[in-house]
Image 1 (cartoon, helix red, strand yellow):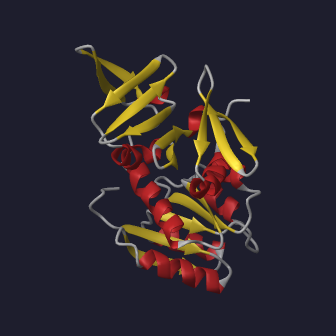
Image 2: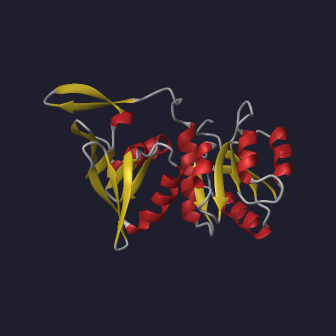
Length: 246
């Protein structure tokens, strides 16, 4: 999907108030164009066969065909839409990730959280294919070398610079953290603190102590603090992850 074209979205939820609220929030997002809606998963299939849809926002627990079952059907489309689950239940997050959901948003939906889901849809659409592993140029002592992005465990803000951490060491690049957050969102890098991004693929464990959250990444392991405002979102995303190490 071109970043210059607005998204066409489909919202599927059997509860009319939730459906209307989600449509209202999406229509206010400048990255979204048309918003189609239905309160039945079976009707959603008809809409999807008749319209090119970029992203489907699906409730999970619906009568008849569930949101997860609908997502499995959509996965067999020649060009499937991206999937965002919007649900009141945390318990299906792992299953949601198994059908390659872009995001898993818990009800009641906050406008900023939904906007983040839309950002991930847009960013993920512009990422290279899964078989590609983009390289990042770094300099040290006048020598330029290239890191595989998949080797980066976390990123720290350093003013207008960012420090990339790998198992072998760290490297400073002339790119602000906010820029990397936007460009790498589709590759599983998420903000856990105002000065930290973490790669979900490298998270080994989550630790909770007296209401404080931390994640452990890399080998050798490094513990990183998670700010309170990012804790819930991080836990939602980690529920999805099939790549967490035991």
